[in-house]
Length: 195
View 1 (cartoon, rainbow, N blue to C red):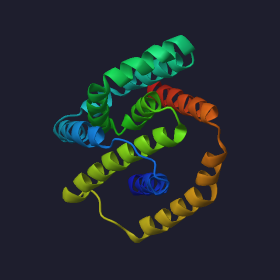
View 2 (tube, helix red, strand yellow):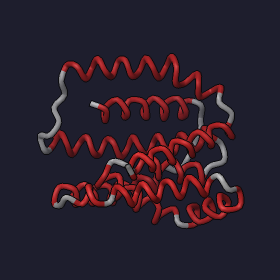
View 3 (cartoon, rainbow, N blue to C red):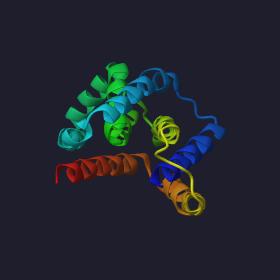
View 4 (cartoon, helix red, strand yellow):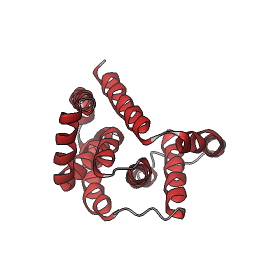
């Protein structure tokens, strides 16, 4: 139920930004993240690996979030993530395929590659939309997901909340505060995986 709703929010975010003419390079997400996502999904179906790596992902998110709070360390992290973008996208895709927890890592990468919240959010939204679409397609093809009437109600509510609350709040949030909120989200997500 959450997957289609989060896909809708990501699609709205991408559509709003593309209408504004914001440009970003979507090809690395498609060519590097998507294949490794599918590999991660295959591993998930073949093993129970997704249970054992959550604490490691949590620790990585907490450490990365902590680094982002230290300006010099944050600059070094941004440089490394930019330099290792292909490898980062492959790791993010695999992690998301196995655990559905690649969104936090994708947010860190997007905020490292782009200087404005609009560019970073477009990159992250497109990446998540692509990853969630692939996951949903696999679930539909394997018969593990079938649309029900209640999901359309949830989609309508999601679209309303995004348009009435999410988008106006994002427009009023300064870039610096946005980065801090993303860092806080990443740290909280990491901590939730550790407990």
